[in-house]
Length: 218
Image 1 (tube, rainbow, N blue to C red):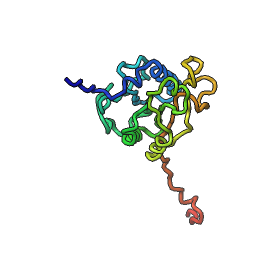
Image 2 (cartoon, helix red, strand yellow; image 1 turned 60 degrees about the vertical axis):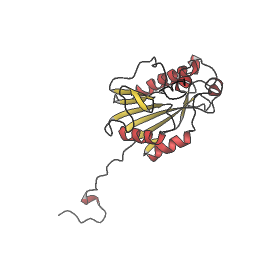
Image 3 (cartoon, helix red, strand yellow; image 1 turned 60 degrees about the horizontal axis):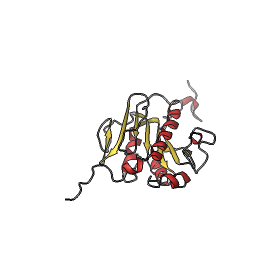
Image 4 (tube, rainbow, N blue to C red; image 1 turned 90 degrees about the vertical axis):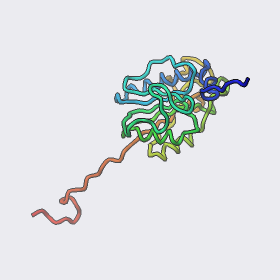
């Protein structure tokens, strides 16, 4: 009798349930917690990678959604697909931890739609050039930053300078992303792309008396 096919994404549990992958995800969450502490308390959306076990971590403040890919849809706080069941411009922050590249275009489009002006998107990608990934995370998918940055810009988001966090070689606490040299070394395990939605400020028409050549007021 043939073996029944699993309902989860193929290879998802192997890639993200290992000790090294879970450790890196925890470092990413710890680094991002310090960044979000300085942000206004707005509703948020957090997409975590697929994993058999629920991540052992404390979520950010309330009014948020925590989702993970599962069988072609998203499960977690709600079960949904794309487009997201959210109104436009309702979220202050969107976090994407190692999203798959298969539906990157529609996903980025939806993220840009639900962000408010001034909202930020935090995109975590495994760094393909990191010795840590080559030694410990060979099965973790890694993507080049260029195509993701282009998708973000195509949706009208302003892309900031890329940051690098995590260890270069070993799983040591001193190699955490908030230590000395954070954001500088391009050999760290994780690349973080930060994009912001910036609306155009309305420009009011100049008063008649200020216009060059305008007739003096009576």
